[in-house]
Length: 107
Length: 315
Image (cartoon, rainbow over the protein chains, first blue to last red):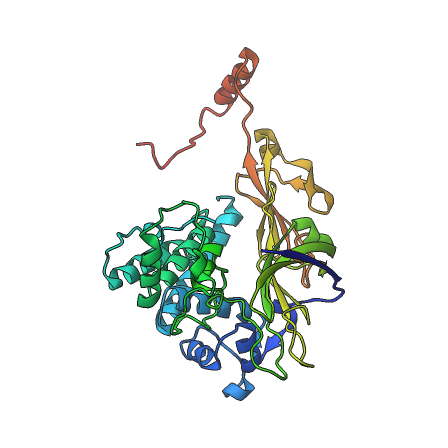
């Protein structure tokens, strides 16, 4: 395949986890998915927005990573939303154990 | 390009029933999916497996692949026959599914690139550009100090006539001080171009820290191993330690045991609030490889004749 090179300077960027909140529509755009699929993940408790109803939902920046992992697992392992929720809970637990191991110096 | 034996990738015979293909894929996907797998080459393996499944799960595509497969072996040099200038035509299915992985040239020569995540221009008028995602590795020091760092990204582009090319983009990114492993940066307007006057998409960079030989990270906190001599642990000592942004004087309190954590408040990653730095003590024994050293250990044994190193195990 042909290769082209472009160069560009960026002066500004923000840390998503600290400075960004997403609406449902924004999150669906960033994750390239349908709103319905995100709603399903909220209903299963995988994603936890603030706000009473979907129009007013606000997702914290850390949702970006969680939603993308959930969507990839749902698609690639052909999981239901409920199974995805279980997998994510187990992954959280593994993360917590790994970080404990790191603190102790075991790899 | 090489012919790929998709059946071999899934560990299957060519004659298998359709539902065996799904079963084999799911088993391998659970093993190699990059979000759950710790296999060293998980991402590359999963990509192969997903591509094989995409080719074989659809009965039409499988038939087309089998037709080609009769004439080729895995790894054999493969050139698409001239009559395939337009590729195969399929009744749809996978098209439009968003995939994170690009497919191999071999796959695309058979099935075209329309089944991959890279999408060509669609329709007319206004349409905001797509958001793009990429992973970038930075050093711990970049996060400590912040500042400009050059990165390069390879972006597949599809032009109006459907031809694919790879564009290499160089970006200078201002890494914010105190960014943590696994966080994301958003670069507004650096994603896919918009159509018409619509705005470009954003670029999201997932930040991964390159592993450091001396420092371990846990969120904002940094851990380092601090080996000390037995007498330093017993009697206390002042030691100078190198930390990511310089040197620091640490006091090992008398009577320290291995595993004791010495905390340096606020000397972890410089976010708000800043993390802490922990030095985890371990005790290094001097070798007993000379008569003098052995003598010293013997004198120690005499001096501590009442010491019980394993009270729970002795009967």
